[in-house]
Length: 187
Image 1 (tube, rainbow, N blue to C red):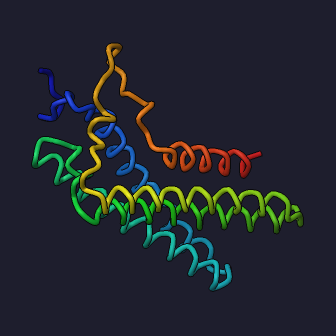
Image 2 (cartoon, rainbow, N blue to C red):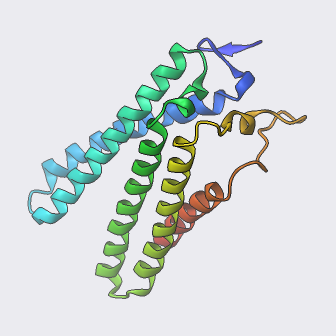
């Protein structure tokens, strides 16, 4: 079997390696942006600065848990180990939803400040609330139910692609909700 970095792809681990690597690069970008913000935005209100700190610390904690999961998976030669790591999955799910929710809230506030219209911010926050609830529900349900076998989702079909029809309802609701919020914000 072929492997990259000593990781066997028989469980579909390569997309996870790409995802982990991308999250590390994006965290570096966030650190740089936060540093630049605090060096160049000294006139911003305290509330906005506190918001940036909350977002940064939440994202930092999320990255620490991700690094722990990655380390645990690499040391076990199975990146799917994180899915059997007790309370890490609910914590990751909650923090992912929380960071998305407060980021959507910030951009909803910015839209309201620029357009003085409540329609888009209300729409964004309604959808964001649903995606936050779905990712938290999924994390808690999966994290507290060790009998769930998520590994089956990563088994390949005949064409070598992951079997997607086994995902629970909350996964597409969460991902599509987040995509819809991001698309609404950027339009």
